[in-house]
Image (cartoon, rainbow, N blue to C red; front, side, top):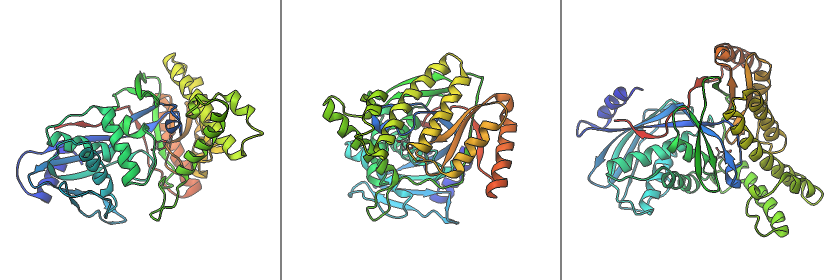
Length: 396
Ligand code: GLA
């Protein structure tokens, strides 16, 4: 929907009244640096064109009423209602947990908040691994802050939204998604040091187009609703087991960020094979991420692209978070003209690939990769080229 259409839909749903506040909150792709954020490493994401749009208006009774224009499993998403004057907990419909979580964390922080009516629209595929949940959390956060006449910097807001994801969506994520969604800069990717939380914005230039292709395998990182541990959390625990081993050698080691590849290789005989490979992925991926940023700066897209393929192989073989459809998309991309590099992006177990493609080859790339995927899996993959966009902002 356009902002005008969403405004009209809001007035339909909630009736006339004071002017609305509109917030736009983008999704993200990560160019490289995967499963490194919770290891205090580096990531290199950018905000993308597809986004969530929120329209809101303050209420005086402390209630939050949220509706969505989207259908879930073919049915209307259902309204979410809760009060700032009562403890905020998870509930149904489950999409509302992102709204509840973001509001609850701001309230816990002691920010004086007003109630609000909000209508949410999205052209970001949910379950596509493009951070629709972070877009929702940060978008809700920015909206209620604006309606309450409060301000907050991007980093503290991203940290609160990360906690919301942990506590309200049962996903023990790192800081990458909320941080890039909150603080993206148009035309730039963000090299984030996840230890200091210090971002450096790197211009993407005009020599490569970023293309996203969805494997159409729904990505799910959280545990189940019965306390089951998801694959994402298992990966985190393997990294912690690696840290526990290296810490015995050197107590100053607190994260895999502090470990070198030489140390990992030297520990091969001592470590369980799975933990060894998880550690090897993280340590090599942090290195690839830093090298990628340097190569991009130097305009060496050919070698930057090679690092994307290497990242994918490491995520597939050592970290084991890829799926066949993602491997197929990367393999297909590697055979098409004008492609610098391609890899799965985000947490994995489905979701999307990101490819760097020569601008003149992008259109044909999109058509060819879709045809190949269709021929193999009988599905038309969601796909798009995207510039790097600005992070979440009040737009009206
Ligand atoms: C998900 C998490 C991020 C990050 C990636 C993997 O997107 O939300 O914090 O760990 O997976 O890089």
